[in-house]
Length: 283
Image 1 (cartoon, rainbow, N blue to C red):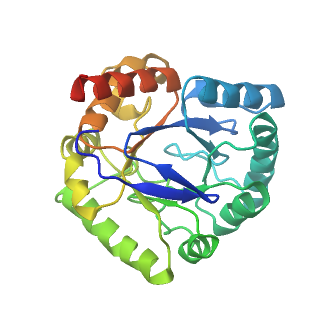
Image 2: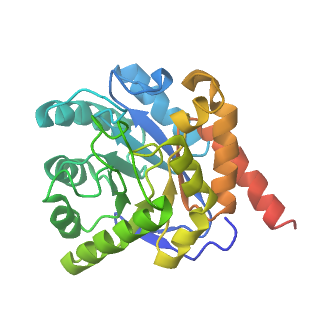
């Protein structure tokens, strides 16, 4: 939060101000996401989750239908689309104007969600590596794009992650991919270092420790650490017991300049934002 640059995003004809951090609530319409509490499949469960995110202060909803946990099973494009249509139909019934991010690495799925349901952000765990048409698609759609770093694929990313300098290599990766996006005409780009995606525990904490260095790229940074293994493995607990550790990491990320926090526990995260804001601006 300290020293946040005045970033903005163009979403469905509106300007979203990122001068203060935003909280993105996770909506998983999957049966197998790593945190059981995030799995929502019935209409009632999905509607209640959307209401909860908004009531607790979330300003974005990230909907995903393909589990990216380590070793997750493959889901066909048709199944992913079917799950997302079900979830987005209900989401739009609850709040037609909510800012929606779609979590997908497939260009066709992203286009469907934007063109049919007005999704305002595309969140791609693969940084365009798993579908060569993704960059051109988001440039054509004109929507903000979350460019995430991942070493490997969800099926093999945690087998043997290796780096010389994880921060330098992720930064170099971003520089190359951002240039490609710019050449295609993409405008609003958000960087996600990819905590837990092809990184060891040490890599994850090195990224967090030096997160402010990504400011040099002059793009907003999204941090997704909610209830991940970097918390529960370090603290020898389960994802269900990882809220306290998650909140500590959210607080550190805010102090190091994160613009968006992608979270399961919206209320706790919004409270962290308020506390850090008050500490830095004690008026």
